Length: 257
Image (tube, rainbow, N blue to C red; front, top):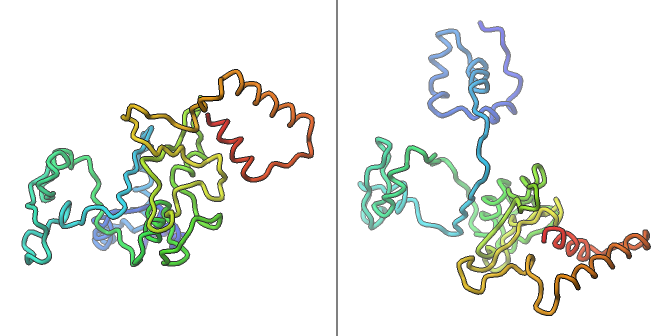
């Protein structure tokens, strides 16, 4: 028998072996290669992350699986969609006929079919998708509080903030909401300094401007400089002055601008 011991079940999810590898484990034991050996080899063969930016496209009530990547062409009319499947660049994987560009780059796409949840409400399921954490309750009235987890981008900003004043986390074109604003879109307990830069307008529009980065019409750059100087003076002369939570948030927005 192999002398190596499996340290704990908690180590297992970190390795993320594929289903094919797990199915091969039984046969590998005959060859003297145990599961710990397989997981150890998996860890050594990992690739260092090279992505410099990520686009997280969250479709709040997006297209159904039978109209995109699980066409079910042999299913009855009441189950399958109205579109036809087409072959992709990967043998054995078909996609919807309305996704020809995706079909051409399918060899660069990771298609995850095992993701599921049992929630019935959009806000709860949306929070799960936006943060990676199950909500405390499956309730449409779930609201963003300091007890809930932050958005992915806020975590990245807290762990590795951008340099030279470039925002780490930008969110647009609007806040997701179903009755109330869906939680999981802000920094939560990480603090307002790690909130995303929200863009609620079309960047291609002729009147596009960001309130956070634009001065009001009645405020010049010189006048803004005077106000900032006054704020610094108050800070220096009033060590006991305590700003409210809202004031601290405004100051962080000034720093971002």
